[in-house]
Length: 581
Ligand code: ME8
Image (cartoon, rainbow, N blue to C red; front, side, top):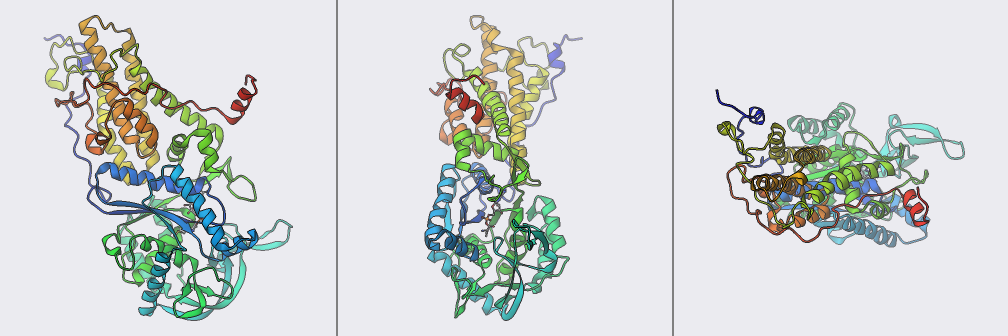
């Protein structure tokens, strides 16, 4: 009987090389028009708005990693409607000035947050006005609009009509009874006027069929079920204009100067405007993928597809829905004074730190809570310590004095079961093969999670691998190996090589979430910009019998910490004052 070292007995069976990335709906070569909601300009942006934009940005960046297929990301501001008209009046300013100012705040925030938008639309732009008026003409041309006297409860903050069943009574700030929307809690007012109505009721069956034939069009799945349930109820016709005497800040109905187009029809058409409607949208439509908050699901999953069907266009390909951020357990609201300013968060946690927090902690299916300690704990433990610490340890001059991407030695880290003979030079243990298997799988897991709008899970799987790599490094304690002994040097270099290879994969995969930190990491590993795509994700090529282009390369010069440890605002204040916390 042959003598086998225990570590060889534990080795897993030979694995096939990783398959090429899955070509799903978001795969390379397909057009993809991603969008965020367009945001109201009645107040400055908060972390909820930023979250929607970051989700879309991460999907957009991840898709770009898959290949250079044509993709766009549109965001922008929703500037018409009663709500904006009233906000401008309350601020004593012209609506156009309010819009320009607040729209600029959104644009600046998204630029600062590194949101990779390719278009920023404002609904006050001429290109949009033209698109909305053409869209209206198309609805009218198909006989789907009629004029009627309409009365009902109108909720200005939500810009929508509500039925009796959708409202309730609550005391206002002075204790007087007042009617509010059941869903948003915002006050409603009784309104009666002559409006244009859209024959929404005619689309109940087509909408049901569309949803039943496209089970994955709305994700996560619980939101798909919600929409199906809505479609079991009555679907009344929709009022799609307001009297101009009441609402001047909006796009007039073509050919009827007494009416203004309903702000939601105006806003939804933005997705067509950015696609080039009415002349050039066919190249992009219906490759629309909308990221929306749960509060505006009905507008996107019922009204919008029905309006599109009404003008003879296909509904969007995908609607990604996310839940809301609360702050210290409470809903964010101006009246509670707990609205969190994203720019202040960037100052406190850095842009990448806060991007990471929102995308790692945000679970689309349920509301998530923000508070300072939670951000600091997560970011310190996962970015500063686990990832940054690992990079720091394996590139430290004391352990890698030549400062190069070290060589991998096959004899120290043998591949496959055919080598399960007397191979004393092989130093790898069963857990090390598990690490290789995990990192080999990781790109596919991450892509799968991203395609299912589970960015938090993609990050969870990266973090699990980072922890596994830290375990690998700790287990083999390369700082104890002697460079002067040729056998030990081979193994020392191999341990460093494997660790750097792991970090290279994590750096590439983290680009969509923490672009600046990933760039710093990859630059330190001396991975060139053109070597950071999905096709470069072949992990540990030398182990798989292929050449490794990085071996022997001089590492990048930046030896600073990858990510600074964060401190609470209170602790920083105390330090500034010279007090020890
Ligand atoms: O509804 N947590 O604009 P809006 C997470 N103009 N996301 C949040 C959030 C929170 N607490 N609060 C808001 C409108 N959001 C319309 C949209 S689209 C054609 C027109 C995000 O300024 C979330 O995406 O009220 C929500 O759907 C959106 O902001 C609402 O932004």
